[in-house]
Length: 180
Image (tube, rainbow, N blue to C red; front, side, top):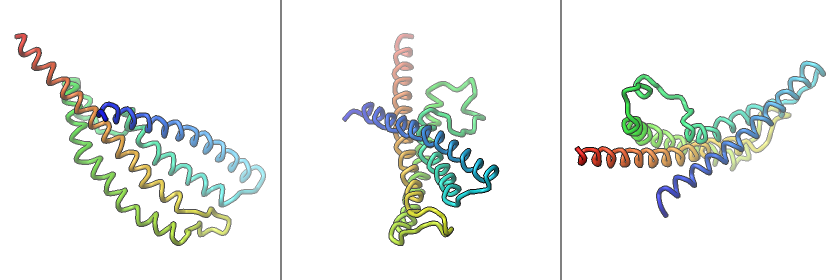
């Protein structure tokens, strides 16, 4: 299987999670609007609705991270990176370094360290401590390793893509050097 095909498959998966996230955001806004209306205008409310709101927010954040990375919309310290003096090759090298030494190890750390919490939550059938709260707390906890796994995959695709940029720029530089 070619690396470019793998990159395209991962990018497609990130696009899919981005679309899912956008639907969840719309649902979350409608749910919050309903909850606020019920609480402040009609004097009612539900602990389950409030918990569902923050569950959806967590899921949106976790599933949306890979989509955000794919579109280069994540938080970045732009002191050096946005400099007009940096070439595409140098930006790609910064991204490769950051991905290899920060993103991938961090994702692996979160995936590995969060899994026992998910497993334990599933085994004890953890539910909300509130009497009217939601059951199946393990589903929300499972979103942590899933979200970071998706982010890890997109990070790998991004690194591979940046490696291709460096190789392409090196070929262009050597071609220009031979023409001189």
